[in-house]
Length: 286
Image (tube, rainbow, N blue to C red; front, side, top):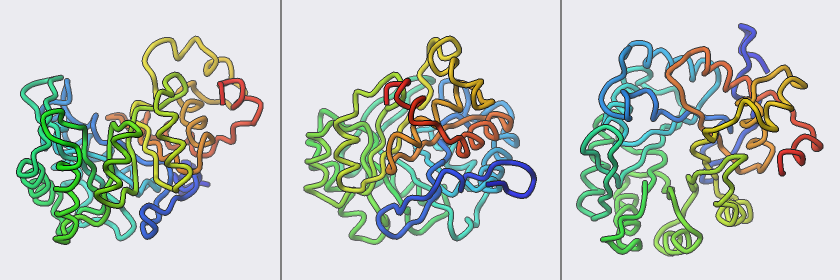
């Protein structure tokens, strides 16, 4: 499926009904890397970052994932600068619960008052009255998980959040969270090489919960492994095969590859159209 300019449209990845009422194309965009080094501060070329976000939408991406901690605040600012007012079908998801003290440094704060402050900040930066999908970023061991998720549930009751998601959860944490609020998505690390969240994915599949795999490209020898062996058959890169494998792995899978490069963005979205054979899927460990 092309956008008319010879580029693959993200719609080629198929669609998913998030929360039962938000129809999104399964190939999304993760906006963590439109920030500076160490996910800290603005990127070197902020206009290029805005153009990447605009190009996402032009290429059919209507699910963009970010967080207040990316920058911090920088990613949300750039998204709003690039595409606000948002097209009717674009879902911007964000997260709260992490704090930043410097490049590459990540703290946790799951206190209800901190989550409320984080949510209010995201609403302001994204120029929204309601966040379509708000996600608890990571469990704060100093705060009972039910208390943190319960605080987000309260914000949803106040009309500031449409749907709630959880990120970086175990099956036990997912169960605790679902006892507090309806959970429509889970965002955990998952890729061809790291499937430690397989048990969480199985629950998501059974209950039609969107599964958002972060870190879809595992660092290491991606150019010299099975992905690289298969790639020439599809006139593709190993990275594209990694994305195609994720899309084939499960109908609830919602990959969100991120980049600051327009060329890489086009490459990632082009993976939407790769029809990986059952044989090659199994060869990769499907």
